[in-house]
Image (tube, rainbow, N blue to C red; front, side, top):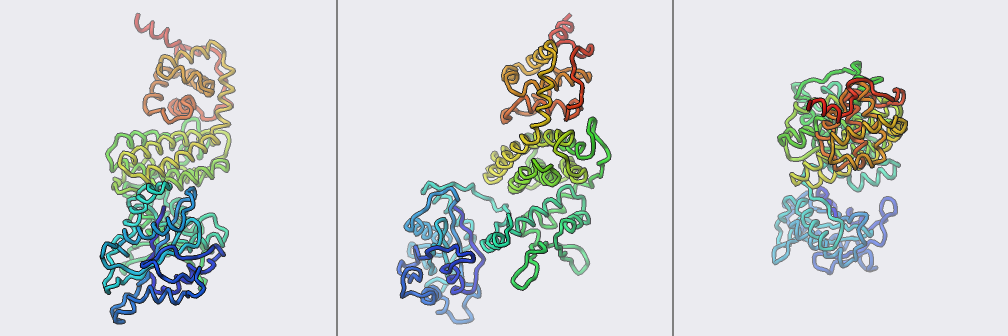
Length: 564
């Protein structure tokens, strides 16, 4: 249940006309009162003799009773209270009780003999009500409505439990501002998937990802097609900015601009500058990682490596460092979504969108140490868009796999800190990453699976022995998984490249937990291919069929030799 308190207004009659009217898209059905301050207010919806004017005059009477100079200019208080889509439909009686509890909790009408404001609750849809009040109490004083939004949210959490409704995670004031009803209706009329505010927030976040300074940031905003206005001090120093979509106009035909801070708390210019405090980033797309076929693949390999190291910081580092790495992980997700292939793009975009809420908390991020992750975001952006197949596609699967564990670690960190909304958002992001991973990994793992099934029996048996020697507690589970042939093929490639499979596999399995993995063998495939500098896409590599030399001596024989 979400109460959404609007800024105070100045026309009671105008708000009532909207609430009792058909709505901008004829969406208002059977508008009527469910409760009021005295239980006897006229209802223009169901009483033919009642009028909007009569209801307005009744609500405004304490305001009009004051001398004109003492009347508040903005005297109309308005909130909507909405249930979740999966909730049952509440009765009018239940909504009436919700309204009474919300006005009491917010100080609009506290009850228990205390002076209160006049109010009325209107219902014109199954899933929500609107409460309108006038901000002068019966005795002429102003109500104690300080922090009424937080008080309404706290009461809503109690109501949810009592009525058996979906329980919303409590917030901490770091969430981005929700779109207003007017913004949502406007987006629907224009056929937009998201409101202008939401589209701008996503575009600005992508422009920030991996940017190394103001010039590049504003250049990216312009390249994305946004209208940009900068705010400067008399000295010429830049103080802030605001952005607009070219086709989002007000009634006068002017672009609707949003300041960065109104898009999200961490998108104000001062907060963005904090990201650049750790030093400049490099343009290094020409430096290819071993086995990478081009810039997109190389960037994804570096992203996987950076995410692998970041997990350890989030799990064991100081809070300020962990917060910085979690924020930087959001940049990586934005950059990966921006440069992803078509078959993974939507899920990665949804993952980045969900994780946006998890990237902020009241824990102050210590910037600078997160440089490796921010560099990874920059590499992704400058490396360009990846193809869906070949090394690009395989390294995308590798990067998503590593990011899944980083985002899961972030969810656990937030849960330990009591950040309920952030933990929930990170979990949603992880689920989208899991789906994107399946799409990205399907082809390269199929190729590896086929290669593993073609391994000679002695070679396959030797890789199974390596698994038993390296991870005895997981060996039987790994060998029974459908992904075992792909892992066997990877171990054979690593062995042929001169690596000892046992310590390589022990290190890959021991550094991070594997409990959240759908397939342990799949996870180990990507960790081994990254650690051993093997091509992520093994379609063209020869299939090892015989022992390549001393490095391939069976683990048990090596143990016996060492004992001698």
